[in-house]
Image (cartoon, rainbow, N blue to C red; front, side):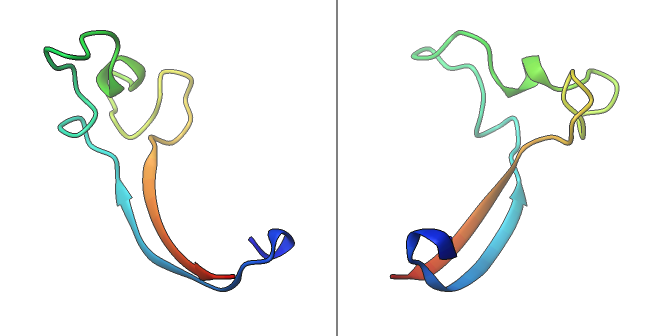
Length: 61
């Protein structure tokens, strides 16, 4: 953030991305978040990485 000119960077929230917001719908019926999380441990991706999170950041330029 600082390299591109942002200052006063503040992390407002870090939340788990859940399957309700990243799901298949009638408009998007391809793969969804559930397809990329481990079946027995949804805190990890199928590759073994931590499941995605959403980060809300506030910064000034």
